[in-house]
Image: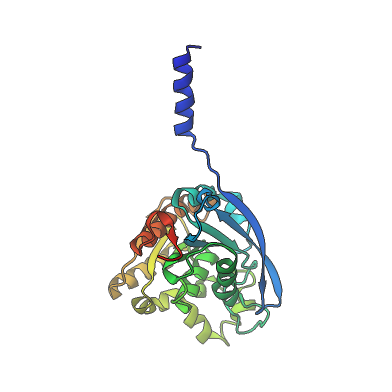
Length: 285
């Protein structure tokens, strides 16, 4: 082969197939609230290994859906590339199969809001070089995890500066047939007030004072799209700034693995707006 042509082919491959150098770790994070430890997946961007002393990285927390676990995002979506592209740490905690990421009023053993919203955040900040402020954290999730991200962010507005939901179950009252949901929310008849209080569509007003950057999307063929449209309409009526998108697709990994790319871009923009240029800030800044 002509040497010049061989060199051209090598350069073309380098530019069309970038080398991703992120690191994936599994860590065990203890929960004092639930008296046990749970595994979590952490993805560190390439820049993390070469960071200068004092450099810190923003964190995006990704919550799995019903029946899933801490391995779902890495197994089904190329999220490591997003860590490299936007210079962020990605954390995927285990939220239990049907926890709905709440502190259950009927099952004292299910304290997943406290675990994810407080204990996981504290562990990650203590063990990794993070920007340990509200403005340096974002949280999102899919389906049950979309509900969980919005619920946790609203209940803990000083912990997260940005929040997203992908195909989120934003009104659990429409999910009474989901296996196991009564076990954490309680019987809908006897615990109606709690169900109502946890419905994101009924809590839209809370976003007015939370000062959290917000992005929501759902597939047009998703059974949850109507409740997401209702939430969007209420946010518009209340004048709450947010991004909202509907794209072709349903309640599938094909949709979620595409949607997460837009959401991490949204979070990266939020981080930059708060002064985290290129996703990194020194501890002294």
